[in-house]
Length: 251
Image 1 (cartoon, rainbow, N blue to C red):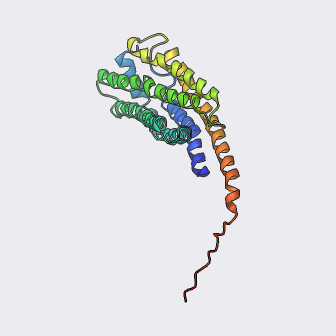
Image 2: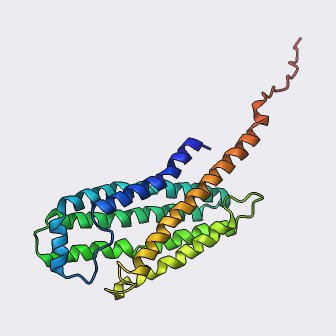
């Protein structure tokens, strides 16, 4: 176990959350622009805050990659649960990579909208739609990831489980609360719109809570693994002297 490397991956989660939030605020994207806004209003937003939007999006783009090491760390500890079969661990890592892409791509599309803020407002609105819809409607990879963690935790039959069972129940609730974001395609106003209570604010709260809870669970798992390996390594510190065999003498 490389504890230092695991701790670096562990702390990439709060780094991602803090840096991403800073970029979000710099760009003026909190609260998000309404999907019901006219093309003129959306174009004015990009034209009047161009440099702040560009800077904030750049910070968000840098933050997006910080989420990958944390997801890989989850995969490492799921491998401990699965034993020889690592299908759930690989799925979690793959979904984490997909989530990173689905964070970075909308950010780059918004950057394209801010790159030429004086273009036709209808084109700017199209780019804005193309960015916000996948940015909020990104629930499928997160749901699959939550279900894999929950299933692995429930099936952990070891004497000392990697994660406590409440982590599995928490991930099940997260997967359920991410689902309303899928309905934003039908609404431009109300709780299911991309800036609405259920699609955005609840999902954002669950998203942040998931990182906080998994940070705690992984930190405890790392401590437990380090303690187990330290205890198991004690007998190995004694040098084993191989037995000496008599060398036959030839006449």
